[in-house]
Image 1: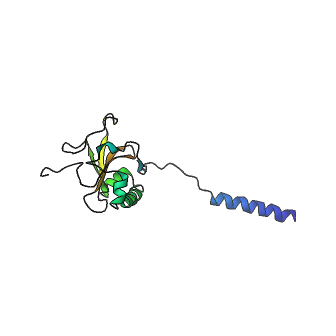
Image 2 (image 1 turned 180 degrees about the vertical axis):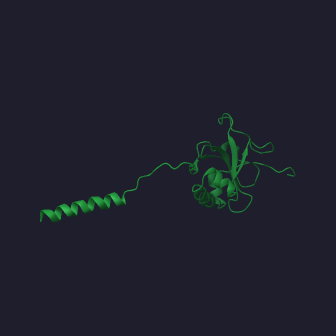
Image 3 (image 1 turned 90 degrees about the horizontal axis):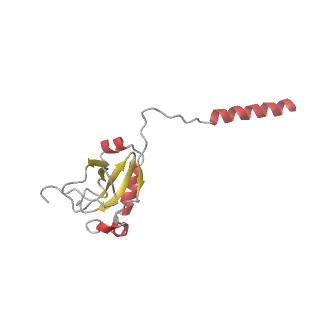
Length: 147
């Protein structure tokens, strides 16, 4: 009987060891994008919009769905898949202004194609974090020359 109990204990230890995964840092793997809303600017509405108005316009759910797709990508992958367009500098022709609380050089970008081609989420990227600053359903963050 003691032999059987010892064998069961050894079998359990082997099974646990086999089922245990050790995570290792893999070189060259880029971190996935995450989102931060601390710099969202409701003071520039219009030209931007609030979360509430995007909910009324049935855009908020599409935005969250797009965030879900993007959060599975690194910044480079999101740019390559054309989820994100990186501008680096704040656009020269914009109906928006850089909020005073955003200091220093940041890489401005937009998340494109929120329920169609026009609506965008504008913000900036630091490391692998996209900071949401403006909701732009009318494409006024980076205006084309002919507008």
